[in-house]
Length: 132
Image (tube, rainbow, N blue to C red; front, side, top):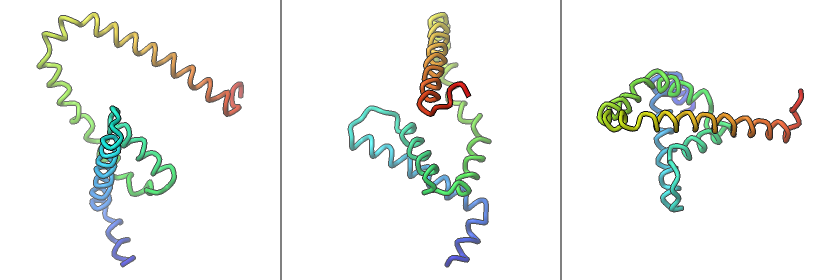
């Protein structure tokens, strides 16, 4: 049995399919957790947090997920097609509110940059690596 599993995992297609199944199960798990807790939180974010924890604590081996991550990144541009279709569908509405949209994007960018800098500064203080 052990030899069979080694041979299966040596095939890239098996690792991709198995990795995809793991990602789907994590997505389903995160949706069920949020549904049970009645929490309004994006299930994909919770799924990513769970995924990161499972990788960090080596519950899921990194080598097993490497292939599906490579495949996912290679098809990433195709995942933006629905976004572009939505932009063309609401072009008139976007054109009407373009200055407000650009203003919000700029404001959100600056707020994110400031909060990230403050957070990194605090983490560096807590870890004692500030001024190194």
